[in-house]
Amino acid sequence: MTIKQLIECDEAYPGAGLSIDGIPVTQVTLVGQVRGVKPQATNITYSVDDGTGVVDVKKWVDAERPEGASEAKFAPDTYVRVFGRLTSFNGKKHVGAHFIRAIDDFNEVNYHLLDATYVHLFLTKGAPAQGGAGAAGGDAGGGDGMFVDGGNGGARAAPNRLKLCSKTGQTVFNYMQRMAAGDEGVGAPAIASGTGLSIRDVISGADDLLGQGLIYTTLDDETWAVLDY
Image 1 (cartoon, rainbow, N blue to C red):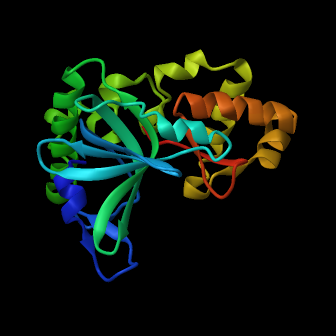
Image 2: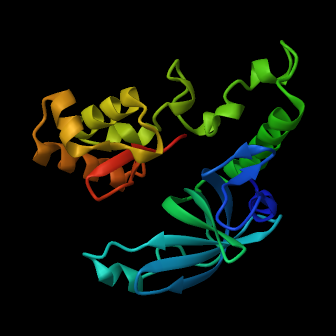
């Protein structure tokens, strides 16, 4: 999405679900430039600008490592991609970040704006005619198609950094992806039962995946869901 879309998205009444182009939305991805950084005790708030608007992105700090709050990971003027949950509080939108990463190739900035345009047109005008842009860019509606492994894995194909995780982490990820448990995620006991791993190994593998931004915690620290790419 673009930040303008996030800021202007519909809220039927306070506390109601948000929607963009008539579609309920929770998880979003956006690309922009960091304009400001505000480290706090519980989170780091980044002010992110993508040329269409500015939105606050809050990255919560691990309570067990409070020292992380004193160091901003992304300095002003850094281009970043944010994966997170869109939230409205007192009428103001912000994104609670599951994962933020720096952008190394500026082409990704241009690609994201094209991707957001494609998704908007797809939702408001319908799918393109067969043999048109959709045939050449079949991954566009699925999210990060140009920057992940395409293959036959579908819209939830894992990014290349899954290869950087341990074998245990890959096993945990593959099981979670097969379960497709949605926003509530899958708990460590269920993963252990389904994979034959110990709880300790599951948690260790999940830590690898969290570090790579492939999953995020949901109901508690031992329940996770896969980020949609």
